[in-house]
Image (cartoon, one colour):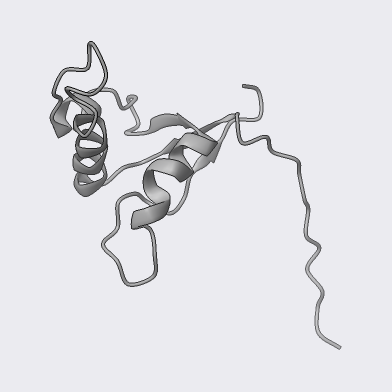
Length: 95
């Protein structure tokens, strides 16, 4: 008989925070997503990838609401595509 691994499920609200380590391509993607709205949204100014890289914490993680992270990176995430972020993320259950 095979060993059965117990799975623990936890509730996680997608409005809570997730911390992700972006690759250089991920930072570039964030800038492109933002710059798409320059001239369409009052007050939006052009940003480059360095702007977003500087927002990462001391361990290299960038924080998002989980739904926003899915919205920003869902369309570019797929097996065989370039990697925009490291696959291990940190979930914040306190936010």
